[in-house]
Length: 325
Length: 313
Image (cartoon, rainbow over all chains, first blue to last red; front, side, top):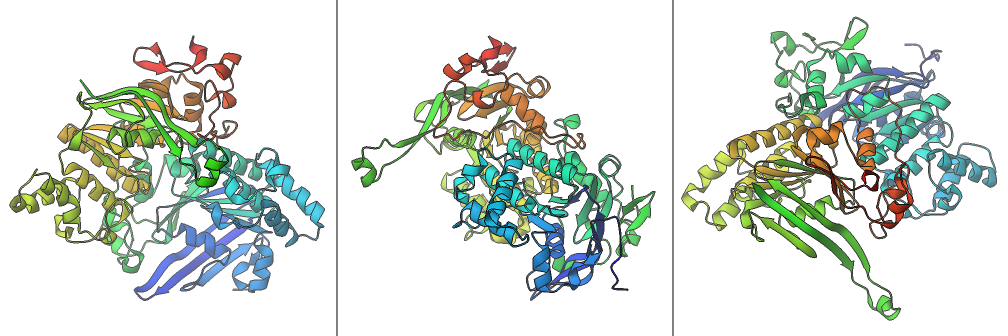
């Protein structure tokens, strides 16, 4: 494969990404051949349950995987440039400037012993050649954008003086500081109340629409991506099993797992009726059965499912199943 | 028939002062976690108790289960103030609510043995039957909690609660920590148990989708007070209180695509210093002067539908 940067319309292209963890219990293929792309202003929902590899996918894009985890294959092209080939120093210049990450727990992004202004000014000046005054002004603007009241005052506060929802908004403001091309958000609203979640979703949506930032929203909550995302990738046991536009995937799922997930969500149309549950649970990644990882829980499984299905194009959509719906 | 009667219940938590604060003559901090709440639960009913963090729903649940004493008011179960074993609680965190050093058979079997519900000789079969009912393989009963997944641990918690033959289960965010597909399994289990054992539930949750699915009646709390209660279908179809209306608009649903999220302005005020009058008035788009001064009472707006809002009267 040539190393010449390819010009493309996508902000990020992930090709055949493989991140494996080499543990004593064996090789855990947390991410095993994942490909997707996301364009400017687009919101991609990366959906799956605990342990499906969605978070490791996000971490791999930014080169944040710690040993025993290693990225063993694939390409991560940010505006044509393969991030996996960059040296640590070059990656540092990209993180926080071109790509930012929002974590589930904002405590992970905020230093508890530094005031918010110190942290934000540092984040600006690490990537932009501006004076402290200008940096502070940018910080205040960013806080204002995410709806924090009296931002000039709040800049002088410490992280513990904010509520959970406020803290997450500060984390989003920091992520937006350098106007990144791509934001990876890993379950940023899972721990928050519905009304606070709606505020965060509102900010995220505004950001993408106004600045053309591409957004990858990693979550287990289908109803959140239903309202937010343009496209959805469903992951199961380290692989993408289905992808398509939100309407396609949620209204006419092709993969039995996607169908099961949708049936598991309480819906107002089927009040009180038993939920269409998926039997069993996700197998451990160290003891994945050969063939389709979902077959033990699948009602449509047959002999052919002993062979791993390829991600196949079906009427313009992608599904990894021998017997799609 | 009313099985659980909550009558004008209040719970205050007081943070005691240290020496320096006493010398300085400071007043102790008082949190009014639950403020004059009344409602009742009928036999065989599922009542959903909904609200955001800090609204007092868990405190109320704990009082209903007899874990906490109310500061004022009465909670009666079948007319008596001591429910004993008849009310059991299922907790949110399946990791923290099981003793990691006990085997599953002991976790489930300890209480019925101690309370003389089952003889020692029959205990093994009794535990097996409970585990089976909750969808667990009795072959695993000699294992420890850490050897199970989150969903299985939830089931152990449910089996433990059922072991003393309760009539009312208080479920405090019982499915919040679970993945969607596992959550669906546990919700189905709750519904099956209700059918088979004629159980009554007080189902505490912040997840309105889950509550709508499961509940017969819904009670909405905001900062320690009940703001609205109604049959589930009615409250989701025609919410009366501005807070309920706003809350329901925020619920993400599978059916709503690429919506414009329109958040409620402001944050939930601190329960240490709730706003005067109607607690919701600083965030309410319809607030009037009276809302700042007087707390509205719960009034019937339709049959079986109560709402605490000045706009109704």
